[in-house]
Every structure is written in C-alpha cells, then in structure tokens.
Image (tube, protein in one colour):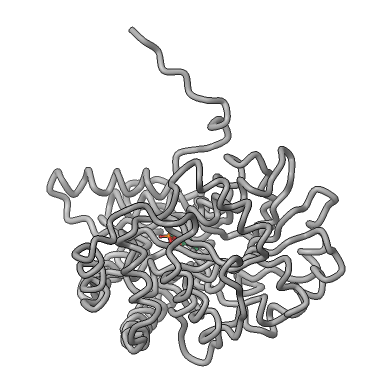
Amino acid sequence: MAQFRRASRLDPIGVSEILTIGAKAAGMKRQGAPVIILGAGEPDFDTPDHIKEAAAAAMRAGETKYTPLGGTLELRLAVQAKFKRDNGLDYGLDEITAGTGAKEILFDAFMASLDPGDEVIVPAPYWTSYSDIIRIAGGEPVLVPCGSNTGFRLTAEKLQAAITPRTRWLLLNSPSNPAGAGYSAADYRPLLEVLLRHPDVWLMADDMYEHITYGGFEFATPAQVEPRLKERVLTVNGVSKAYAMTGWRLGYAGGPKDLIAAMKVVQSQSTSHPSSISQAAAAAALNGPQEVLAERRAGFQARRDLVVEALNGMDGIECPVPEGAFYTFADCAGVLGKRTPKGAVLETDADFCAYLLDCHHVAVVPGRAFGISPYFRISYATSETELQEALTRIAAAVAALA
Ligand code: PMP
C-alpha cells in the first residue's frame, strides 16, 4: 500500500481543537443527542439581498473571468473609499489588495515577510489560525499571555519585554476573537509608542470585527491613531463578519506598497485572486447602504448582554463584558477542582468543556485552544432561543458540581 508522507513543514501544526470539538458535537447530534453548538465563528443571519443581487448582476454581465491580482479596480476603489470613510486612512490603489478571505491576506503577508526563525508577537488569547499560519510561513509565534486582569489586552511593558532582534511583527486584533476585547485609541497609544522606538517591528492590525462593537466602545485602528507608523502597518479587514459573507471568501488590506506587491507575488502562485463574483459582491457591500451594520449590532448586543449576565450568575464563572465581536470568554477557574456527579474532578478548562458537551450537550471551546487557560469561549452568533436553552444547561451543569 502506498504510504502518504506528510511534509515536515506541517509538523508543528496541530489539529485545531475547535474543529475536533465541532466534529465530536456534530457526531453526537447525528446520533440523536440534542447538542447545541456555540462554537461557530460566523454570523447566523443571511447576506443582505442587495449584495446577492450585485453578485448575480456581475455573473450576468460576464464578470466571470480572471481578474487582476489583488482584485478588480472596482473592488480596490471600494476598499479605498471604505478606509477613507470609516478610518480616515488614505491608501493608494497600489497599497490595497484583496484575498480569498482575510485568512489569505494574513497568509500572504507572513509568507511574503518571514524568514525562518523570524518572530511574530501574538498576545494570547488569539485566533487559533494566527500561530499556525506564522509557523507554516516559517516564523515563530511569540505568545504573550494577556488575561482578564488586563482586559485581555497587551500592555506596553509586556510588549517591550517580548521584542527581540528577531521580531518582525506585532499582530493585534481588535475587537478580538476569542475575547471580544477592543483596543480604544487610548489603549493603542502606549503600544504604538513602544513600536516607534523599534523601527524594525511592523504591525499587523486585524480589524475583522470593526463593525461589531457595543456600548460606548469606539473602534480605532493603529495606522489612524499613529500616522507616523502607517508606513509599517498592514490594516487587515474583510466582509465575512460585518456583512455575513463568510462563504464568499473575501478579505482585504491596506499597507505599504512594497509589502502589498510581495503579498501579490505569493497570491499569484496560489489563488491568483478571490472569485470575480465575490469581488463584485464585496464592492457592493462596501459601497452600498451601511444601515444593516447598526441593525445587526443591536441584535448582537442583546445576545451579549444575555450571555454575560447569565454566566456571571453562575458560581465559579466570571465573564468580563466584551467590547465587540460575538464571543464571550469567561474565566472558569472557580469550577476547577470540583467534582462532576459521576465523580470526575475537573482539572482544566478542557475538562470543563468536555463535561459540558458529554453530560449537558453544549459545545463550547476551552481557552487552551486560544493559548490561555482557564477560560472558555461561547460564540453567541445563534438565536436567542437556542442561547437561552444552552445557558440553562450550563447553569445546571455548574450547579451539579460539588
Ligand atoms: N481574523 C479573525 C480574528 C477571525 O476571527 C477570522 C475568522 N474566524 C478571520 C480573521 C478570517 O476571516 P475570513 O477569512 O473569513 O475573512
């Protein structure tokens, strides 16, 4: 029998715990267990109609051919206008690129810039793909734990301490997946001061959740907060979360033109460009009516409040109030050391999550998967009815611990 030999470049890449839990939960569901999955990182509503119409119109008009690398002129103009309108940022058309999801943007940027052993500072908790993309590109993620005591935000002291001569990038994500933590302009400032003193360190700002923010939190992006840094900032964004377009696979970025050109070299030998139809849809999303964003935001905020309040009413669980995104990241230190009705002792956040899934049929993801423990992530991008039921089950599970 032929034996498949996997490339050694994949050796440091584990199987994502989010996928493992998702697969287990889906398997249980298929066998009839009433499992509620609070794991998915995607909005539960549909892509707005005017965006779908733009895609259909593009198809009918024959926009079904190869496009330029980095996106059509129409899309890059829409991205340019978006950066100006929402962020006060001026990017030339050669400083803008689009990829097959923001994931490709991150991938292209790291492939284009990292040599073996180069370091990327990643505050934890972090979106799980960051560390693996950095490793595939040959770099080393330098994970800096940032717990709930600092609002899951990196501090200037920790940043300063993590910088070495090998540091190429700092990667920040606001509001964040998984904690929903946001950096205001004032939060960014001390970090940007540190970077001003380290001219070789570049900054990647993942703004995917820009439009999903709550209450008084005011979104800011580093290139806007500190214009002197703009020449070494890559501002990453996409339409997946804002416009419920995860399946269209369209992300974009603004940054210095030499970096953008190098990213296009990577793209030219992998995807060539995102789907022409998705590009037309994304241009319509960015150019079209933006009221949809506020409507969605209100809906998400109601769910956030529901989840935070319920979790904080549980003995041993503490949930900070997230500034954005559609996740809560609660501290579960208070349930560790306790015993389940079957007699098992919960030693880690992963034990707690396994107990919730096995005994109470709720799938959530342990902090461990995001590089910091003991926490667990709930994605509340699901209906209020389902959320209510899941929270009732989690409360019962916690109450049953001794
Ligand atoms: N950044 C963050 C923080 C995310 O959570 C995600 C999606 N889970 C992405 C980037 C990638 O999004 P996409 O590839 O769908 O644009």
